[in-house]
Amino acid sequence: MWGISFCFAHNGDVSYFDRAKFANDEAGDCLASSNTPKTNIANRSCVKIPWIGRSIGVDDVGERPYNPIGATDSEAMFCAILNALRARFDTLPSLPVLHAAVKSLCHEIVTLDEQHEGTTILNFLLGCGPHIQFAYSWPGSREGSVVWNGLHYLVREPPFGSAHLSDCDYTINFATRTNDDDRVAVIATTPLTDDEDWVEIDKGELLMFDDGLPHVVPEECYEAELRKHGLESDAVPRAPSLEVDVRRYMLRRDFYQGAAFEILERSEGWLTDTRKILFSLGIGSGDSMSCAAFKHRTMPMNYDVMSYE
Image (cartoon, rainbow, N blue to C red; front, side):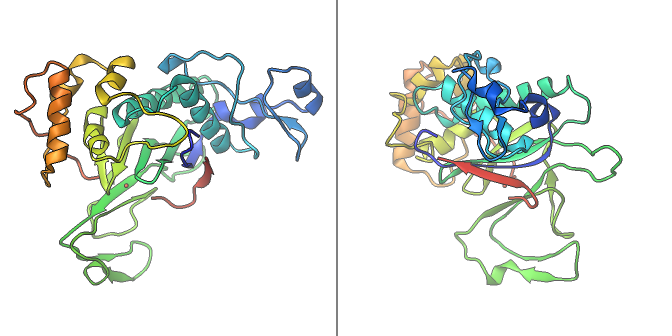
């Protein structure tokens, strides 16, 4: 989408996107309407996925540019998220705006799914281009099971040490396999090691990972955007500027008042861009910058994985 590779990995159960609830039995039902999404020729059934997007200001007009080939709720949900984002944005959204939009869509999915029987379990990773990965968790246990399905994470960075696997007697010394410039974030359904400090992602929390660091709220995504890790495409233009994008999609005015970050590497270009944006929004001169601490939080196993371009 937008000339950018998107990848989705989901582990859970979302009845609202259960294909049996929205797919017709006969392909003829699909072909009767010109507004109906494409037909899955392989199994001769109509793929009419539910619409989400009202939470970000997009009503259903019948168009579904993205439709699943298979029959899982994961595929249907991924396509629904892409359809909503494509309908909402005619320029590439900045990372703060994208975070806010994806978080709203997640809340919308959970709210809609509460209308159906069963426990909502929604844990996914969403990769957007070469730099950015989102992780969302709405954990739970399947009916009749005591297994807790959530997301846990940790960030490994210098000084690296050893770690012992929780399911077998094996220890690895990361200091022998890394260098001082490395940092890696790991996400798993359950902690993979028993001697590291794993953190469970809070229920309903959306994290954006960049360079192995987690960003919890839209304000924190500001830094990655200014470091040129935002969305880039030759097919779809960016907004004229970051502040125009934020104003256009109605993030609150005080957004930038808390959007200054602890800068470990003070790039002159980074500071210049920050001051320009703060000044253009009428928030002082941009010379005085408060610090926001990052919670260190980022890859899973046994997930349904798919991608679109």
